[in-house]
Length: 300
Image (cartoon, rainbow, N blue to C red; front, side, top):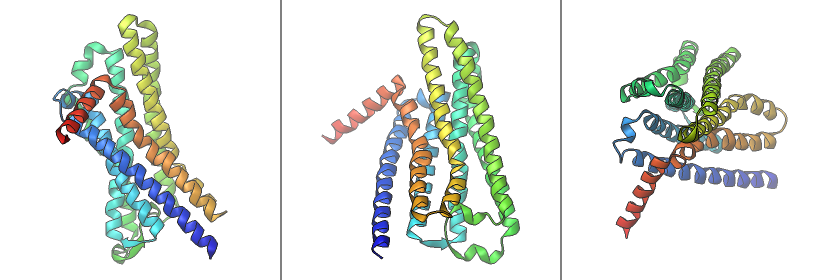
């Protein structure tokens, strides 16, 4: 009994710690999104538009995944239809961030390796088309997976009270394998795209000179950070398999590893975007600083 109470206190502390992290990064992202709309240059430039899409996607995904975490640890039951809505949003924006990162990498490739065609290929119209394509590609796995679920589930199951988690939509073992296979295929294509862009930009960096060389190496570092961010998102796909195996061994080990995975592979990748573009980009950083200082002055 004492051990159960101690475990419950530890879990409450961990959940509270996660809430602090989530609220902190949501506030940072909302500040960056507000800064994005302060200058016309940002919402007419493709890389900043894609950056804003990443921030909005991260906000929605963090919010939804945090709701799922709280519902899971509190053992609170909700009706299946409501859980379905949470699942659709979470599933969609799980893919939007890495796909947008891949599009941002391609934009850097065009800017550095094909500078004469950058204005044509990376116009505001192209940015809109990219956003539509990203959301279309992100919705495909969700559509495939839910089509199988709707074909298998009974009508009465939609009004049942269940603890909401992604696993309740897997009615057959092969569904889990199919979901994993689709996700792995997506991330394989994204990894190939990023590696291709990285190699091409590296060659351009070696051939460049003076100011161009400095700009090219900065672009190379940005692509490298995108690759690291994508790697963390990719590892997230393997977490359910590891957690399922640990659950059979030891409950406390499962809880601790799940908490670690949530921090490292769900929170961390979504919190890197503000650092990569929001703070490393000089133009955006100066706009952010000016916006924040103006806000403080108005308060005084």
